[in-house]
Length: 312
Ligand code: NDP
Image (cartoon, rainbow, N blue to C red):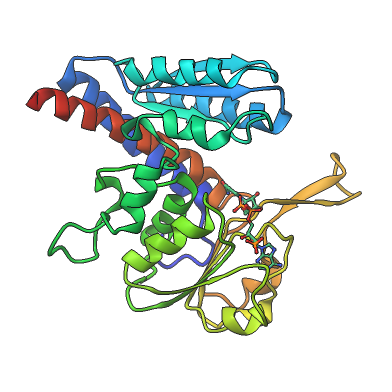
């Protein structure tokens, strides 16, 4: 894959799922315990959330991870949700707990996320996991910044982890490079910036108040786009030879398609691919990696729990 120009997230995610499937088999054999398990909590009937949850459960099934669904109506109380999370925290066959966001307005999202035991927080959004990422627990004392994401001892958010994994698997050097991130959300922009910084890139974070963003992006050897603005990054913003990771998923009207719309990224892909050295398409880039990294976090949770039980 190292020489390929188009970064194929779909193929890479499939390769990672195959690696994980083998890891799950080995884990079940050696531990003699239950397979890794992921609990998915879904509130309400948002169609997009239901689709994501279905995709996640299917991905679990395919690699031998158990998935447990907990569906609640839109008007569920916060106490009921907290009780559910509390029960899942203590279940030995559940290694990952995922609360599908967004939650309805009457629920305090942060309280629910904070109720999840950090070691089961496979979305990496619990303050303890955020702190581990920000304070650089990605690097053991004295260790070079060549750490592998799969070896970390805490949970890193899935989409940012997927971005780094794509750079690694396509041979993009990160150390010493200039990286520019578009977007500063808790789920993508901030954690991906942290990962790049801990891998020794020089990172610039940009957002909706950045003045002359094009000239900032032009400096980047690595661009990660997570602004959620359809095709805002133009080809002439890209430094020739740069690597471009497009996280954005935006739907734009298109009368020529059956559904009347199509999905595009934050980058004008067709033109930008003539300038970039490596670039992810949308769809088929970062998207499939997110679920692969969720599986990895769940499998890691199970192997860490087994290792801890062996010591105790
Ligand atoms: P948010 O809406 O939470 O954050 C968007 C960020 O982009 C904000 O920080 C915002 O700045 C910034 N921004 C908005 N407009 C501009 C602009 N014109 N120029 C520069 N920065 C801008 O989105 P998310 O981080 O949740 O998601 C980003 C995109 O990634 C979306 O398209 C989403 O669908 C997609 N996504 C894809 C995933 C995948 O699996 N592939 C997973 C998660 C998200 P400010 O802070 O100033 O408002």
